[in-house]
Each structure stands twice: as C-alpha cells, then as structure tokens.
Length: 146
Image 1 (tube, rainbow, N blue to C red):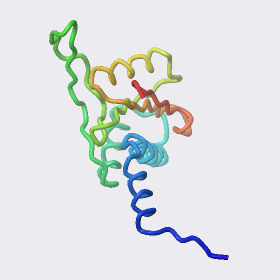
Image 2: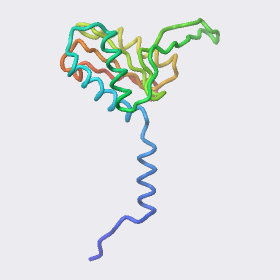
Image 3: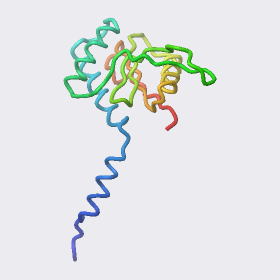
Image 4: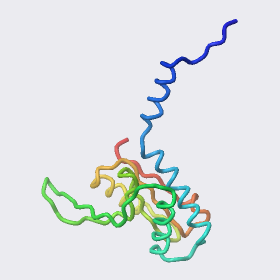
C-alpha cells in the first residue's frame, strides 16, 4: 500500500488558503489576548483611559500595529458632515476596538460600533468591557457586511 505524501502543489494550495484568511480574524485573537493580559495586571474598576493606555502598551509589546483615537468623518447623502466619532483603536487597519468600563454592555453599544464600522468601511469591531471579570466574558464581536 502506497502512502500519499503532499507534493509541492498541495503545499502551495494550503499556503494560499492560509493567506486568504481574513486579517480581521487573526487580529481579533491577538487583541483579545492583549486585553486579557491588561486585565490580569490591572484588574477591574479603573477608568477607561487607564485600560486604553495599558492596551496600547500591550499591543506595542506584541508588535501589533494600531492607531488610537482615530478621527472618523461622516457623510450624509454624499456630503461631508465632519467628525462623527473617534475610534478608540483601529488595529492593523482592519479592526475597530471600542473600550468600555460599564456594569453591562447594552444593545446601543453594539449599534454604535456597527455605525462606526459602516462609516470607517471596516468589517470587524470588538467591544471590550473591562469592568467584567474575566474580560473574555464581555467581549462582543460586531460584524459589518460579512
């Protein structure tokens, strides 16, 4: 009985499949890992600004590209309406990360993030509530047109 071994063509197909995975999914795992580490060290009960600064440090240490407090302009019927909001983080030019420190996330938080995604023309947003322990229980993925 002959054993089948993958040849170079099979390896190339597998490699293409891996490359075609959306960057958003790869980023979301890294972002969540960074958020877990931030909460592990800082705990709960601080201001959002403390978690934001710590998350920026953690993302930098992990070599993850991001921008903070990114101004996003809005449009109405094809016309510019000016600054619509500031994204807490945009990671790898692909994922909006919004931080909260509240007792519980409300549907309005998810709706706002979806609006942000639409204006920024991005597909994935993560809503992180650092007031819940562990933070992984309070992470919500919001998807725009996937």
